[in-house]
Image (tube, rainbow, N blue to C red; front, top):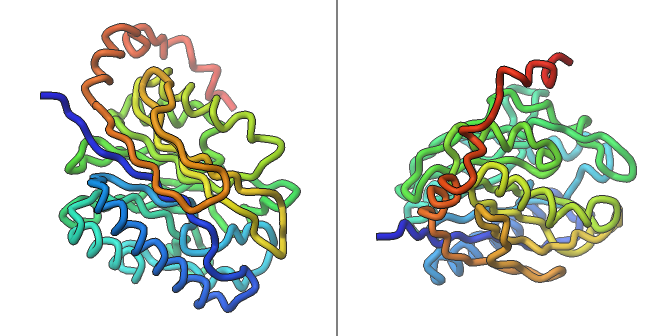
Length: 289
């Protein structure tokens, strides 16, 4: 019998202006996502990923220490604990991107993976941290990830995470493939302009090169007062052949739902033997610095 998993991706506009009190923004976004997760459950979704830094705006558009107050410990923080309850309630694997506090003053861009019985399985910390104009001042907020490229055994299969800017680096995607990932989620906050043409090139290419499914999530809309550009949504799933199988709109809240046949991974890998034909003995210069 085919191993078919119903996946879901949630993209959501801000429900409060970025200039509102931080706790008000956070509560409104959590409330919105609780409702959208319930909608996803009603559609039969078994594994669902939220967008990057889901409970706030993309605050990296400015450098202001006030946003440090959005940090939480993982897994003991209130958002992770709430999501564990929701995962158990809906029998759904959840991938939950939050702003993590490790110790005071050491913060990461992180995504938790929670199993369908509500068990916290672990986390991935964003590895590649951009710092560039206009409006991507991430090194002010995040330390580079240090947990490697974990793959999590879940009720639906082997799930992994690669966050936003990471997608420009094929090395990590290859590591996730070699570590056994079947579905790789990339929660993002990316705007129209310079990199939009890459949105539907890079991640299908990762899917093809490593023969796994990819769930690419991007937030929609604009976020005053910064207005660094339009977050153009278009969250999508693509299969191991690089074909986009379900896609959201550009500017609205949306839940992308797709049935992913994980048996296709074996079929494609038996056709394209990229892992067999790799030559790691010849790649030493790639990591020489």
